[in-house]
Length: 320
Image (cartoon, rainbow, N blue to C red; front, side, top):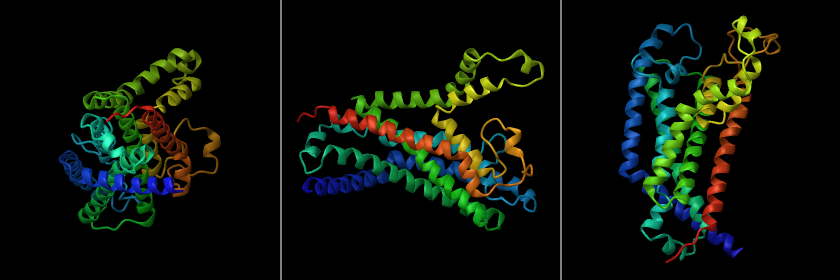
């Protein structure tokens, strides 16, 4: 019981110390300012288009997240791009930085255990990202209300809030990956480059590679090609491979939550359309059920990456 109490106290100390360090670091402030400037720009541009459809769309506020206008992409695009960068920027030197400063042995000589140290670093960085994303979410909702002058409905707020929670989980995936590489590599630069390289691979290259691999493994059927259709087996395999990327999972969750008319995230069969009115919005619970496998996938990826890092950190030798 004494060890559990000490570990718990150490967890709180490390988490609050990491939270304070992140919130006051120049690195985080610069990233947050960039994201906020982009949010203001994209919401303002979206509001110019939304004003023309005030009486037509019952889910007006959700358009602030998804509407784009050339040459500026949508807010979702920037969020999916910058959230991993912010996560990696907070954690790529969490552990190896302590090694390089020769402070890790001093920390562990205190009544702070390794598990408390690692959990505290992860939770402190995740709480920092959560605070930043909540502020950003409130900023978008507030600017939307300011620009169009119409308050959001309860369904819109609920969908936007679930989207916020999913974004925090998405940030946790890249945070856990950066923390893992911070444990594996003693050089902070190597850990940062490895994490950024893997993120770019999954974000840019893997979706294209998944399509090519699926056509090699399950060649397209000429009978479907003659009708201008895709082979079902090829499509299913391509989606399975693409969903190995956290970016793909996050994108599909966004579609299900912010577009209430979405009824499936894969091939749509006639059985799914029975009794349905095409174009009719789904309730929030139905949209969450559609995206539930993807949400579970993001949570599972975060847990797996953190456990791998935890095991690696427990086996490392710490010398004074």
